Amino acid sequence: MRRAAGLLVSLLTFVEGGAAQMEPCRARCSGTRCFAAFHRAADSTAARDGCADLGGHLMTVRSSSIHDILPFLLGNLTGRFWIGLHLATGCPDPAAELRGFRWATGEVGSEFTHWPAAFDGSCSSPRCVSVSQEDDFEWVQGPCGDRLAFSSWIRVFC
Image 1 (cartoon, rainbow, N blue to C red):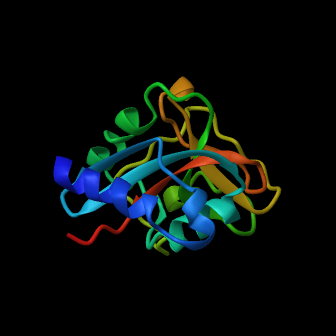
Image 2 (spheres, rainbow, N blue to C red):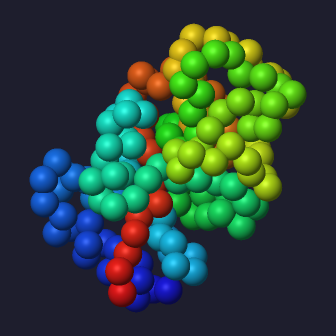
Image 3 (cartoon, rainbow, N blue to C red):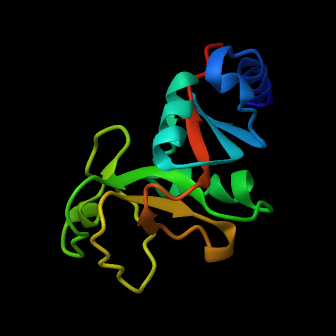
C-alpha cells in the first residue's frame, strides 16, 4: 500500500495541463482505490474537473470503511472539503435515499450516510456536500459555487 501511495504522488507530480498545479497534501490507498486531499480552493465544478483531469472523481463515501479514511486525509487540515455528492435541482428530501442527492459516479444509493442530526432543507440549486474535521466529517450541504478544498478518488495504474 505504501508503494501505491508513492506511485500516486509521483503520478500527480508529473501530470501535465491544468491539473499539474494540483499536488495532494495527503494521499491514502485502500485496496485498488487511492484517495487524495487537495488543499486548493475550488468550487465544486472546478474540483470535479480537477479530479477528472487526474483520471478520477470526487470522493464517494458510500461505506463506513471509506468514511474511516477521511480522518487520515483531513485529520489536521482545517476547512471544508468537497466530496462527490450533489443535488442538481430541487430541494433535499429527508425521506429520500441520500436525501435526493446523487454521487459523482451517478449512483443514488449508499450503505452509509453521515448527515448532521439537524435537517437542512435549503433549496437554492444546485447543492453540494462537503466534510470537515471540525464537524466530525458529517455531510454538510451548501451552494456548489462555494470555494472549498476537495478530496478525490484517483486511478493509479501499478
